Length: 201
Image (cartoon, rainbow, N blue to C red; front, side, top):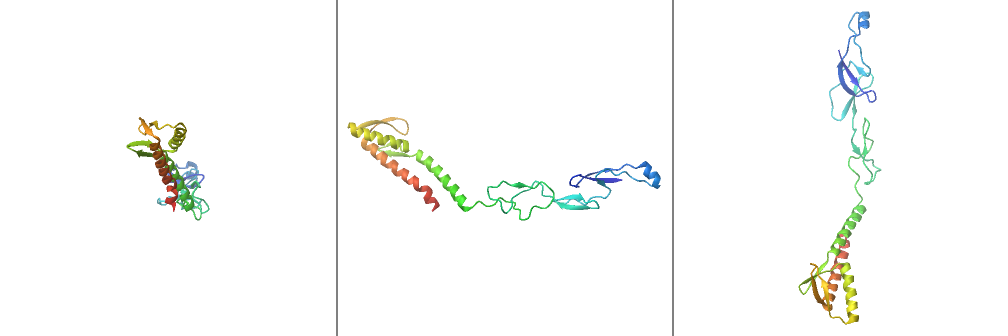
């Protein structure tokens, strides 16, 4: 005689085995009587069904919806909320969403602007300008150095200055060339500075 076992907590089918005869009860009733283990029944379960567990309700087998392991969100959850996980047998809660709630457009725009600003900062750091065949760094640090050097040159009357170019070579440059470098660098930086806001318009 085959018996069918189920779990003690959820009563879902877990396997089958062969029951042993009960010698005393069999002799008493004059027919073969089998021992039934705990948490088991002689009633065979129905066929497997996707998305359902076969559970013993005390009198018969029944299909119970099985969503264990499924991640979901509730209608009140925001896009930042971590996914909930179904841990018990049964249907998902009413209104459960299987996809993360949509990110608000305001948040999307905020993140886009932050990313654009980060790109802008890198672009400003990499500014380079060419004057008379020489390529100069034009980032904010370079602009400050040029401004300080021009101010000092004006006071001292110095006409030429040794300058480290973009390729790390040293070249003699005039104050006029440095003024051109400064003007072009500021112009490029200004163009880059407003770019993130133009993209959002």
